[in-house]
Length: 141
Image (cartoon, helix red, strand yellow):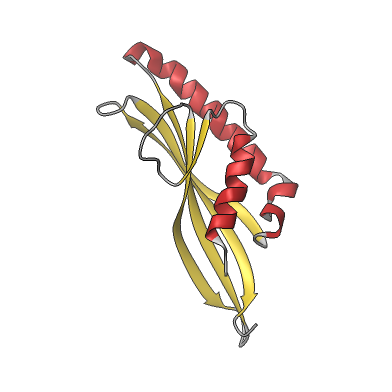
């Protein structure tokens, strides 16, 4: 099985090392305080029997990078900050030493990301990144 809390904690540690991110939330916070902020939470999973004994599980975690802005004239700057942070996240998570999150999983990959804009409620630009964590385990151990 994949220990979701261990994966989220390991991802949070990596994201906390990116100095442009001011707050890292394990889950969706009840109250947002500092921006740019990151959120990490489990999204989905799939299990596949590899053989009569082993199972491969692929869990997808959603990483959100959130940047706010005050006025429409601040929007281009907020987008530039967002793009820069997303590139840093992709670089850090793609490093060889981070592929297995210290042994919490077998390997990982960034599968997709979407840039979104909320101009009505929160004046926020954000990117939702899907992170795939793969692990094989013995069902009978």
